[in-house]
Each structure stands twice: as C-alpha cells, then as structure tokens.
Length: 275
Image 1 (tube, rainbow, N blue to C red):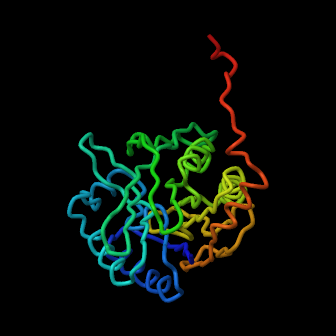
Image 2: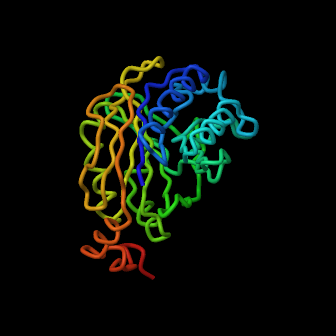
C-alpha cells in the first residue's frame, strides 16, 4: 500500500487552509497514495481560545469536513485529517482527528488524549487543558490490509498508548503534529523511530512546518518510518509538500518475529503500588 504524509503551513482562515490542502491531496492521489495523513490543526492553526472561538465550527455540519469528504470520494482515497478544534459544551474544544473512507464517509474519529500542561523555566505556565478537553479512548480503524492506530502530537511521548494500540491490532501508527522547532530538533526523529521499534509498526507523521500567521514556528520534517525503525521517506525541510512510502505487511511480521516485544511484555507491580 502506498501512503502519503502531507506537510502544511496552516493559518487562521479555514477556507484558505482547505484550498491549500485540496491541492496537496491532489498531489497525494496523483502519486498513487491510498491513504493520506494531514497534520495537527490542519484547517485552522490558532494561538489562543479567542481565535478558536471566532472560527471553530461545530462538528455536525462542519463545512470544511464536508468538502474533504467530497475530495476523499473524488480521489477514491482514505483521507485522515490529523486534527481540528471542535467546540464542546463546557466552553473548551476537542482536538479531533477525522478519518474518511474512500467513499467519502467518516469511519472513525479520535480526540487527543494527552494535553501539554507545564511550568517552563523563564516562561509562563502553559495549560493546554484550559482550552482543550482530553479524550479518554484509544482508537483503531481498518485501512485495507492494515489496522490504523490514532494519536496526535504530544501523545507521541507516551509509549503506553502505542503499545496498547499495537496490542489491539494496529500496525500503522498515525502521528499528526505541530511540533515547535526546538523540541522538533531535539526529539522528533528519535521519538517517532522509538514508537516504531518498540511496537514493530509503521509510523507515519504529518507535520506543520514554518512560520505561521499566529506567530508560531513549527519544525516540519514529515516522515514515514518502517517497523525496524528505518526512515523510509522524509521531507527534509519545513515547507508544504507530500512525502510517499510503500508499506508492506511482511515487514511488520518480520520485525515482530525478530524482536517479539509485544508478545514478551508482562504486567508487573510498580514501586509504591504493591498491596
């Protein structure tokens, strides 16, 4: 199966982002992709809750999602919107992935589980949970001969999620992201390769890249990793584009045969939790 990771430089206007995405999906389809993954916050990349409230549309009847369903059907391709903000009743938002089948219908959604709440030396505290509500359910979906496991950006730092997805049958792990430049330079490649190695799965990571309207700068470097941890393809820059790789179930079986970590894993009592 040929898969594609789409790299974007999303701004604040959903329709402008949709037009840019449409051209990139055409490129992915022309390149033979049966599945295309877009980055986190593909359709709007806000910096704060006020910007979100101005343009974030409800999930039901969402105009840009309806257009993407039409594109998926026209291209006969699975289209995975890495994420977009969805308003919730409590005033916060879900950071939601939406997965379209080649017929244009939504076949799965996933709300980002892990939220970045941190006190950083020299900077104000960052509380993603003040704006977003974390999900509480891991999600897999059928993708031809593969099973797709869902995650979003900061999730990649939590290995237990990916082990759980792999144990549930996932052998292709999606990681849409909007990594900052410093953390991207330090951790992007090593974390994605680690998630592939420890689960014996393919990892596809679609990234935001470059300087955005909201003042943020993101790392780019969308890539696809094989189950042995080798980078099959990468956009070695932060500009919009599409990267392709051909993936094969045999590589999953071989990696898991050579290092049967999933089969060998055991439950154990952690210090301080006994009895």
